[in-house]
Image 1 (cartoon, one colour):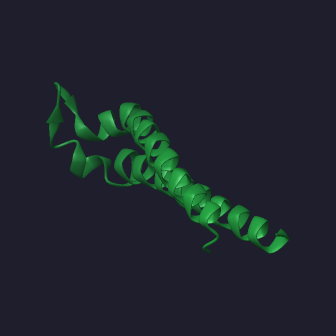
Image 2 (cartoon, helix red, strand yellow):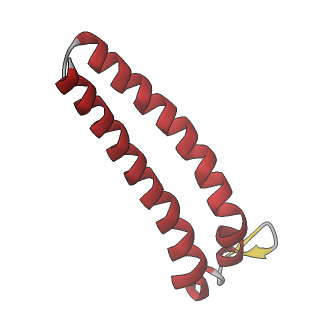
Image 3 (tube, one colour):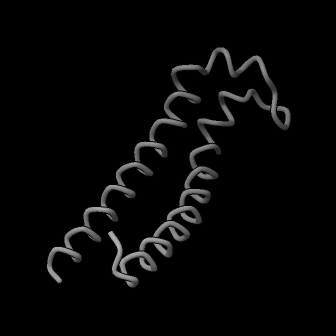
Length: 84
């Protein structure tokens, strides 16, 4: 039982770390590293690099919340069945 609980916790933390890396990377690359390239494109009257830096991380966070909920539901189902 303890091994299954540890495996579940390890899978949960692994998913969280991966999603946090995505959440950091997308706005960092889009809003800082590639800002000059992205600013050549306008979105809603604003340069895309500015938009990614200001709004992109918020939208990314909302997408990540729904993705995390779905993946955790799948993970719960997997461990409820007894699989690893």
